[in-house]
Image (cartoon, rainbow, N blue to C red):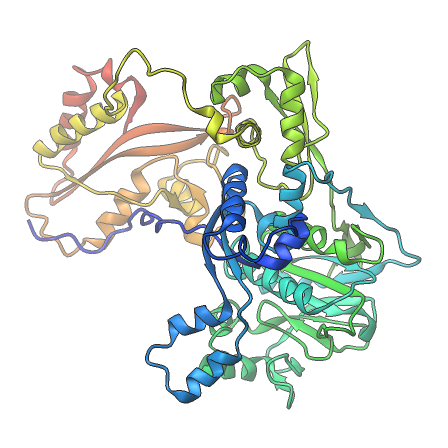
Length: 580
């Protein structure tokens, strides 16, 4: 048969994931950890200091990936350096830098402040800090206009850090953390974009609005020589080689008629998210003491995580350590009324639970409740308590640990705090097993062979579709059984399919050029998802078989024969299938 034309497919497999790597100065890190007694001989490469730190990283669940310096990294990028290039290399710093691999969901470890603080708590050198929300004489206000819903970047969260002392090292770390968050949880600024400003040079209340792109006018951080309109600035970033680091972000709003803008009470543009901040409110080393942080977002949950991470990491430099001032974010209606008000940051702690028996079972070690509570405290999950009546360990999850989502996350942290090297099993299991497919998958493969022998061609379609494709186009009533995406990338990915028919019909649509003399027969065996309040995650998968026939005749006998063949003599095996 002729090859199929391009059909809707499942999303491709994800690329092998790379853990974030954070570069920290060795000497500054050791000073923060209180490791100042090393001799020059200890500090040489592969020496005692590096070996002990490598062991500490392993115990904590992170990894020392490389030991380098700014000069070494630049030298590796420049091959056959001439005299001028060599002179520039000689000017670079030789300070030793440790490159540390961090788990992708530990956003609190993306800067030296978070790494040093976590390791000190892990080693028992200090207790986890208590973060405070300090009420100012008058709160700052951010007014959100309804026009931002059309950008779309409808959410914003804010905070104020008072009495900051920006020096060379913590200023660089402040900027680096924003970059790391943008690359990680912010998904290259698609979900969240961070803006930081000198609060003393702007005046509240602030406003978040969407303005016509040719009417937006301000002096950006990168081009301090003149004012630019929004559209002209993005055109400049798309063509200027010196701004290639900003080019990937321009597509996020380039085609929008209105661009998002944050401005102060005097109308001065502070930022045009998610692209660039204004030069007027830029943070300056040695001068800026009060910092206004705003995070605009398409995902409000991630915006709160990003803001909490920023303020918890750098509030240690405030005049009152680990304190932050709240900001009222007021969402306005079209007539200027108040739709809703939210105070940010949240900085809220929450409780999470895990069964003591589950903890001991998973890690393979019998531990008593006081020991488990102590181990949780080492991982910043304290204070922890034990309920003897229910056998439950309750931990306190701080705002820095957004990665704690399930009881298994608590179990993982207990295992880390207990020590990987202590988890080696004492004996080899008495039985040996060989891996094999699940019964459902094995039967699915057998059924595919049978249906293919009946002349049907298998297709593999996308698991997401439009709401109307799943219901209206099939003349089905939307009964609310479909799982909806809270922030779909586009309208084609609104719900998880509850039937395989939309994908098959779309495949027929894309293959209308195929000869139909002998009929076109497609089939698919795959999963659909249905909401289920009894399931742990609120939904369940069902394996379905669907088949379609298109030809010069109605072909009812073709589909009827398929159902008769595989829906009767194998009724027991098909108990977990739905025939369509």
